[in-house]
Image (tube, rainbow, N blue to C red; front, side):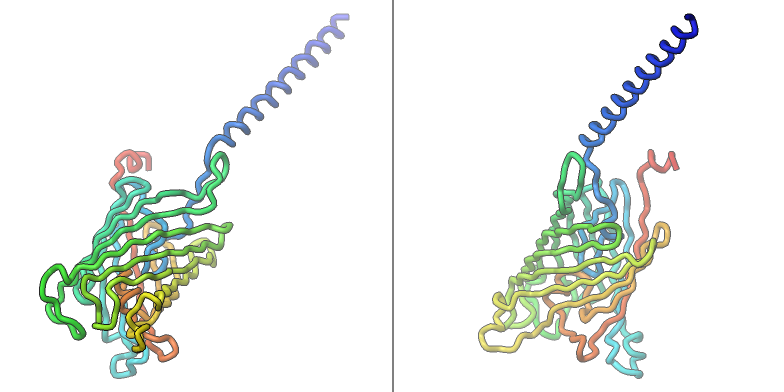
Length: 304
């Protein structure tokens, strides 16, 4: 009889434990549903190729970026197919928060200073918040400091200023593919030529395809709407649309980007309003970006 009571007691205890475990698993499942799961690493860098991506710098982190672009491949053997000619941009980007990044840079191309702020408005997520895309807003300004220009003359400092606003919208489709569109407005206080409009409207398009754990292929294209250009008045357009192809290599704290582009410049001002090269004519500029991130987060550094 005692053995029967013992068996019955163990059975009841096991049953209670089983129900308790089921209840605990159900509570954990419900809790997980209440927590948004954010998509990370849509792109590996704050740049898709030359233009901005939706990514921002982590809080209390500084990204030192070196961008380099050689001359056109069709410049011939005398210029070593462009290697004798080069322009460079040095830039710093700082994460004020995980969503807000501020930055500045200086390009040797027309001696342009650029300064900007990016804010991540929405983050792609699943779980309690099902948001299909990440949206980042960008505002930027540019100052040309080169004394003399071949196509235009500046009479005051105000004419040297340009401004840009972008809405960067991207979605990560699984582990390999990410796509982005970037509606853009660019305003130059003084246009490049008399027939060129001061305000340009452009649609940036691009994507990233992951080739391996540390490498990816990136493509970027900016299409400037011809309806907003004075070239519609019966005159030939002075500029072309920028098409760039990049290859990203991630090496620990560095991101190394190799790229080919028909644009000399490395900012939105140059990509949208100053591109003259044509891929079909061999006006292809080889270049690279190097990004190195430094952490100023003392708490994270102590735990590492």
